[in-house]
Amino acid sequence: MAPADTIDALLPQTQCTKCGYPGCRPYAEAIVSGEADIDRCPPGGTAGIVRLAHLLGRAVVPLNPAHGVEGPRSAAWIDEASCIGCTLCIQACPTDAIVGAAKQMHTILIEHCTGCELCIAPCPVDCIELLPMQTLARRGAPSAAVLTAQLVADESARWRARHDWRRQRVARERQEREQRLAHKALEKLRMLDAMTEDADIERKRAVVRAAIERARERAAAAGSERRSDPPTRD
Image (cartoon, rainbow, N blue to C red):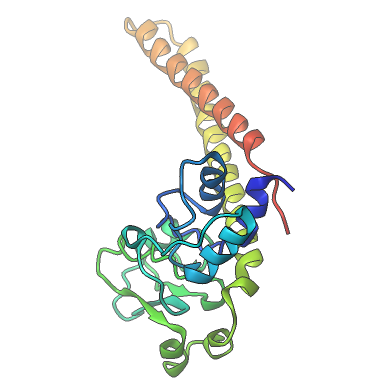
């Protein structure tokens, strides 16, 4: 197992970005390269720092308060009566733990929520809050009572898998959208090629050809990004 894989396996996989990196894996890579210290993960807390220090043969250091504070296992909660169905929280969630549709009420899948808080800031009506599992259990949230006693380490592999799956889904949907746009551009170009009476036809053709070339470049970049991604682990 590569050094980054070993470190990543010890991180909580909340994908909260509080460490200053876009996910747990990039943070693990930054630790390996020496760009980041082991004190940046509030969800992992003191116990996580101890594990990383033991693995890397380093001294145990306090959690850096610049990246947050250690807290109880928590999850997001949506005030469904106030939700306007904007979908911004769905787009922000790194593990697809929010379900809903445009202009429809959204809800949190507690068992898949990592407590990352990334859904809170985008909400335009402030109807999302982060609550401890005990509070969610008292409110009758499904599965919260069971998760109250469950260690984050028990869920890290599942959260990592959901995060990896979401990244693959988003990349696939982006590629499919680019393909649809490229197809429409080609259809438009064929239509323009059939037109001879328009004095401005060459300019229009140039605009469409440029759009097609940009789409090809984006598709090539997306393919390169997928090939460089680390393999998905169970």
